[in-house]
Image (cartoon, rainbow, N blue to C red; front, side, top):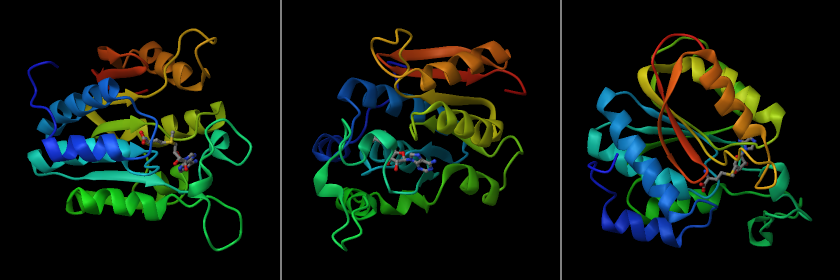
Length: 221
Ligand SMILES: C[S@@+](CC[C@H](N)C(=O)[O-])C[C@H]1O[C@@H](n2cnc3c(N)ncnc32)[C@H](O)[C@@H]1O
């Protein structure tokens, strides 16, 4: 992955300025995977847009390849981002008084400021419903599937069964927050990473810290 071109300088600056949870090294690994996958000339898919931090890098790679990134989020935050939880950011609570989070305005501003809006199709909704509505089931629709949505077993497994069947042969499955040791973090992303490898349809392609990249080598999942 080292020989792929990195993100544009202004994209990198926007990434570093954006709210989000992805460290730079993992972001560069995500961008390298996106650049590689974009050679298939298919759209890239992200689950978990949040405020656009990782979307920026996918969009940068998509722009270079002449494709787009489709990114899905209900923009109400994951369990661990709700008030009282570890990753809550009070500035992301909607100002309209219902107390719920709304990351969509932040997401839009992030993409607009970086000049990348034209390379992003943002889907606002729940991941499994979005997958069903956008075509469901069939293979070959996306060159890359990046899973960084809900981190419970329920949500990670639903993301897996909803979107991974839509990943093209030769495409890349990228999973964030894969922690083999439970002492380092929740196990749901690790379990879907294991599930992909155990299916026999994927081979390990790259890894950087908790970011894992698998290549689809055959049908199924
Ligand atoms: C960890 S954050 C994504 C971080 C982002 N990829 C980044 O690096 O900046 C997870 C996001 O997934 C979204 N999410 C969680 N469960 C979801 C679901 N079932 N459907 C759609 N979005 C979901 C949350 O709203 C949250 O914005």
